[in-house]
Length: 102
Image (cartoon, rainbow, N blue to C red; front, side, top):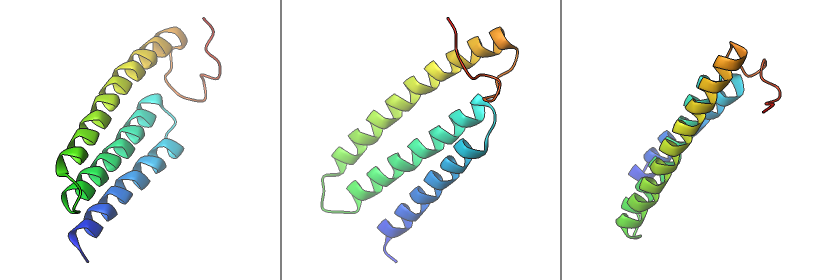
């Protein structure tokens, strides 16, 4: 197998583990960890494809930096939401939060 296939396989495994985490977890923090794993898999796939194909490697790195920036912003926002939900409802599980009323 080529090195690109190995990287894509690892990226697909990260995506699958993240998807399993999103589907199976009951807490909001567990969902956040699953989404972060999926974004890391996408970033790994972009960098590997850019470095191991004739495409310019800088484009893959810039795309991954953009994904990492979005992941950081998403994590900050979700953690703030989790904090508010945990304070107001006393629990950070998904099944207890069915509707956010402001």
